[in-house]
Amino acid sequence: MASESEQAWLFAAKVGEAAQLQQLLAAEPHLLAFAGAGTPDQVIGNTATHWAASKGHVAALEVLLRAGADVHARNNGDSTPLHCAALSNQLDCAAVLLQHGADAALQDEFGDSPLSLAQRADGRDALVALLLGKRSSAAAAPSPSAAECRQRGNEAFKAERCEEANPNPNPYPNPNPKPNPDPDPSPSPSPNPNPNPNPKPKPKPDQV
Image (cartoon, rainbow, N blue to C red; front, side, top):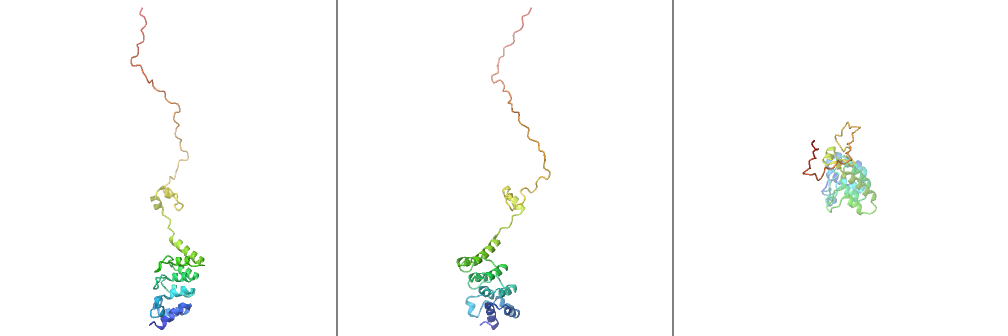
């Protein structure tokens, strides 16, 4: 059987009593991880963070997260508080959870992520856009370093994220390079293809 303070803790999260959450937490810090054991809510296994996110209580959610509540806490169905916010279309609470590092790609026991839950429901375009934006940001590839660009070859240097194609350019280029000399346009005469192997001697002049 749950204690009175434990029952009051979950109730405060459900109705958004941020001040009461702070008061209870100051007296019993272990309540932050309490998931309803000994109460009718133990079947679900929601923490106070799950309940606040599900009910749309932004102030209560901020109190819990600032106190160190696990933004990726799992209930008995492996759902996180962000799953609860997405399922209930609580846009503001989803934004708060994302600001505190919630992962929009985590899946519950049925393989659903907060994003897939939002996409399947009607009228949740803003929530889908919020979750897509966070996922795209988290998945963005880092820019390659100059060393990585050099390893990828000359073609990689042409990419927009690589600033230098030649890491060591010649700082003193020749401003007046000499042109290559033009070859002689006139062909050299061909040798006699059929030389006479037995040339006749020249006749001697008559002797007097």
